[in-house]
Length: 289
Ligand SMILES: NC(=O)c1ccc[n+]([C@@H]2O[C@H](COP(=O)([O-])OP(=O)(O)OC[C@H]3O[C@@H](n4cnc5c(N)ncnc54)[C@H](OP(=O)(O)O)[C@@H]3O)[C@@H](O)[C@H]2O)c1
Image (cartoon, rainbow, N blue to C red; front, side):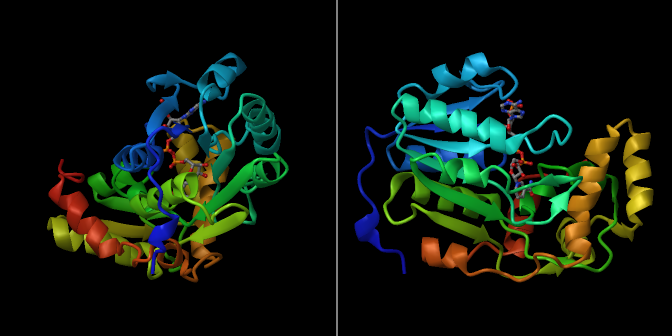
């Protein structure tokens, strides 16, 4: 059960949310506002301007914040140096009086596209600030907001995922854990691996969307090489194509297929099931064409 004694009135707490327009950040903003915190939603196009590529935006974005939710730029494998960037940001944060950092990474400890997806973690652990690290599985929202949306709409999801399984986690649950870590006590020094309640294959996921929407959608397993070639054919940079293919390979190889009980442990409720996600996303018209 959730320990309500750890929930305090956070009116007056100011939180900087990076990726404030993104899948988790947007939901973190909403959750913090519901708790009465003052929120600074930041991104390149956000109300507070923050650009990892423009260091001049970092300190003004951090100024006045008590805590910060950090979303990085792992989709730029060629240029992104998580440890160096996050280390520099964390030092600036400490300098302007930020006390707590919650870092979003991923539940992928193997290298993908030659990069570590947990490379930023040491930087927050070494920051001298309170820190919490979130390592989620693939999000449900990749199917209705992210990388898989177009192919679901086109009715053909071609991925090098074989019949591997993944316990997709809902971005709402990741955000709710982030809000707890940002505002409540008891999460400092924790690394949370966040999954949904059950592992499913891409075929099963696509079947569920198909069943609920009444649209024909097929899953086409392809090889790693075919997938990289297809992405490059769409003018996706080769290093990013390899990165995405390696990420999908994590599903194929069942690398992170075991559900964790962390969402339940932190929030005191079950994580959202993929079927409930599909029902709501379909009702919201996510896959209407
Ligand atoms: N998607 C998943 O399934 C998944 C699973 C586990 C972990 N993660 C992790 O979650 C993180 C975010 O990935 P996501 O796919 O969910 O993306 P997202 O948060 O939906 O979108 C990226 C966010 O970052 C902002 N952004 C992009 N480039 C930026 C830059 N140069 N400077 C500052 N802000 C920038 C974007 O807003 P603007 O365009 O306005 O700047 C947007 O708000 C990654 O670290 C990823 O590894 C994702």
